[in-house]
Length: 219
Image 1 (cartoon, rainbow, N blue to C red):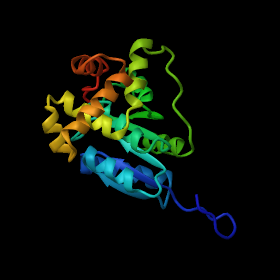
Image 2: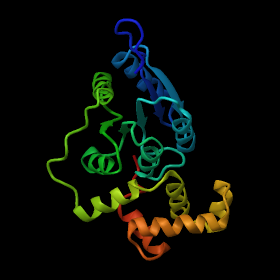
Image 3: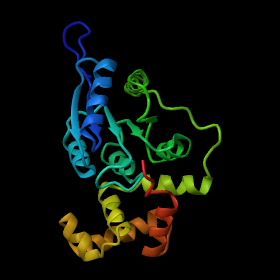
Image 4: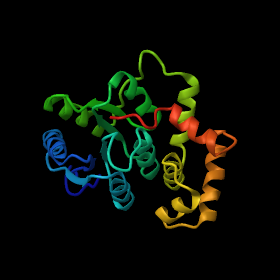
């Protein structure tokens, strides 16, 4: 936050990542009520959201839909968290909260709110996230093994997550290299690190581990 004379504080900068323009408008309305004067950056695809997060000099909050072009379930959270590890991520999704909210936390989100929530609820949830308040831990903790793998994936770098997404999509190394504008040798190097971080022995095990974590969950 910037301070000038007295107690003047600059308004927050918030990234809204959702592929539905009308819902982005609803989120902007909630943001305006929660934090008048906030500057909003919009993105309709995961790649655009990641680029915006990477380029932003300041970013105070990310509002992220689970299901948007380029995202496979919780992979969007992992990618955005890797890009901006110090920026809180609030998931706004139509996914069933009981199952999705704990997983979202494991991947780095600070909170979860349903797209069906009333405007006042969205406003209050955004205000809490901006204030640095995290959702409380679930009463029933998730499966320790699954939770551990979720944290391993959340620890991947942005480049590693992009390579893993390519693998999950069934792309060959040379295709992933073309998609990301890197060499095939670099893709292979990333896969070696990914397998080590995920504690798996080969590409197939990495895919199975990621899919077992509901990476492709709709939301």
